[in-house]
Image (tube, rainbow, N blue to C red; front, side, top):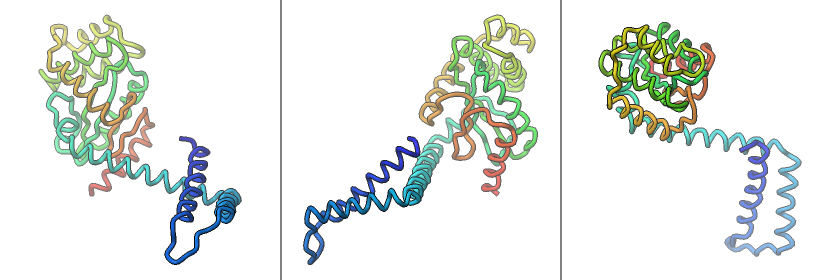
Length: 251
């Protein structure tokens, strides 16, 4: 919704609300005549038009309230889905063993913005080795090779977590869309030629897609930081500031 649309709605709503009040019967008060009601409505509109700050303040208040409501709903959803978001054994987990704050990263091996964002996330984990954890939720939005690469990396996580990161980094560092040959090269380079995708990997992908949809993830990358779902490949400084703010809340 644009600010202009919001202001127009606010103007209409303010007029309607006051008009409704005027039309309501008042205790021991004579009703306004139709001419008086029409004039009062006109005065209200004139006041609002001549004092646009009233509309600005109303729009700002509405936006703040709407944001607060959305944050509260997201917070409730997160509380109700702690296990699938933070404690799933089939989701790759990096960083501190007992972190103060755990991020959830929705990412895709074929997403150029994810490839751009991945080094910033890795840098952040190194900067906060005792405070920060990361759960990776792979969302194969971009084609068959995205899903295939995810199945291999998730299978490796489930079989041998210590070897996951090398394959993950190899797949993520390949610029452009992955081909079958690219995936095979990444497997060979990390000593995983014999790796075969397992059913649990497909199940994990389905769960990630489901929880991502329910959270409102519309593209990758998207990062859950506290009770905020932050879309896009943020610059490192901005990402770190969000994390610092959340860590400060936790004490």
